[in-house]
Amino acid sequence: MSPRFEILKETKIVGKRLSMSLIQNRTGELWRSFMPRRNEIQSKTGTDLFSLQIYSEDFFSGDFNPGGVFVKWAAAEVSDFDFIPDGMESMTIPEGLYAVFSYKGPASDGPKIFGFIFGEWLPESGYQVVSRPHFELLGEKYKNDDPASEEEIWIPVRRKNETKP
Image (cartoon, rainbow, N blue to C red):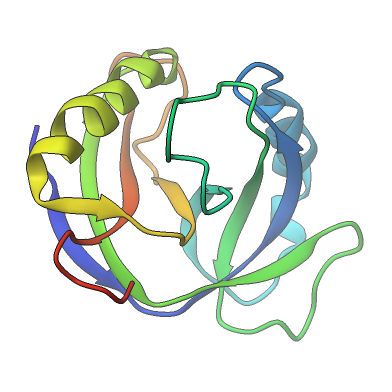
C-alpha cells in the first residue's frame, strides 16, 4: 500500500473533542455524542467527517506507549466560524504536507493498517511524522466496521532531510 502526497490547505473544522489513550479509548463515546448533533453545524463545506487526532510532539519518539494521552475530534469542515453550536468547538488545521492512504476494510482492522504505516512504510519512506493533526477522512463510502468500508488516512509528514514542517 503506497500513499499519495497532498498539501492540505488551511482547513477549519467544528465538532467535539475528548482526551483519551489507546488503552482508554473513548472514540465510541465521542462519536455517539457528535453524530446526533452534526447537522447543527452551519457553513459545512461538504458531507465528509473528520476523525482527527492531536498528539504531543514526543508521542511518536522513543518506545511506543499505548497509554499516552492524545486529543481526538469528531468534526466537519466549515467555511467559517460564525456559528458554533453549544457544546462544540472550532479548530484550524494548518497547511502542510500529508501522506494519504486509501483504506478499504473494517474499522476494527485499524491496528493492522496503522501498524503497517508506522512500522513498515514510514521507516522505509524517506519521510518522518511532524507535529500537525493526523486524521481520517470519512466520506459517503465509510461504513464503520463493514469490510466494504472506505476511508482516507492522512498522516502529516516531511522529508527526513528537511528542517521545517
